[in-house]
Length: 527
Image: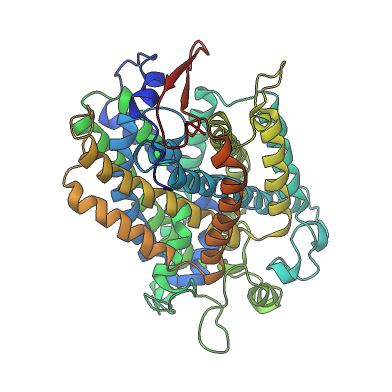
């Protein structure tokens, strides 16, 4: 009975059919778009956390995470080209597997985007306090204002990460009043990010400080650190997966791509391969110049990233300059090898680029909320649009406050792992949705078809499950607990108020705002 409500695909596509998109993107343009979407928070922020989990094996972690992303990206492309409307994996699941499973996906996406925005806010705070306040103005904020409590993995003397709290609330305010980034500004930010990382690679790999001996041992925690430990190369891959999130934006461009069957896979795989090589070179430069061995616990296993134990170790003078203890890893590396000014420039690049990432993540989260509210699964008051700003200000404000609180009290590594749990579940469900649609609606027009879906689909499912099971056990537990809360909400409110359950599918014209009702007959529509 829980799989009885499948939203008619024709009704969903009625929205997309109101638009006429011109196919202008070629493979190279799509690849550049993908590089711009992918390179961002993860590589600037999570290099230290990844090194603590895997040491030099972080380079292998980038390869593992990249391979999972490639197969997931192909599945995303087929279904995004078929259903090019708002809602992402939530809408795809609604059209294939029904409302109940779609609810779990939407609920997971809410967690993913909100926690990811918190993680980026914490990463921005590290660069702000280190580069702007510390190295530029010589200002040192007290520990209680720059990190969360030690018990939550913050720092000794920590209480609240004030800069992270402020940037999250500031971006929320901008989003509420309707400020959005323009394509030109975004292009400039992409150029800044790529230039900064290219300079980092060139300076570190040619530095006299570079020593190949720093890569030994290459896998201090092994390939597998053990289920639930979150360490080893695979454990690091589960965390560093965060550095690739954004490629799904490329898949949504399939409708505007010339010859999508050829150009979409080239754009997706090409951008992911480029970023993987780029990330490996960044990791090699950082580790080869100042080292990247994890700080080991008494049992010979690395202290968990974002843990109280690691925070205590990093407060000791012996580890003060270690890569794994830095809150602004890449700028820190350049300062350590004598390029302080360029390190500061890289810090400025991160400070400029990361708020736009927070904005995009918050935007995506509130739009998932908005679509679910429009379907009747959440109270319509949440999607109330401000009369002046024309934005869903209620849900944006609620989301922003939650994001700010999480950023204020938790370290970036823990937040990234939790966000990845939701992301991996969404990708897992997209792969299933693609295979279901191939069987239930084989005649539907597909501008892009996954080659060898019977291999790629299961590989995506297994890859997502594999990385999920290599997250730290606490991060793995967050998803089922969050899902259990979501199920209480679903059965207490959403199932009874669902528009689909009442027999009506409402489709909103994205351009004109007109609504169309598609009456359907469901087992619940006569209640």
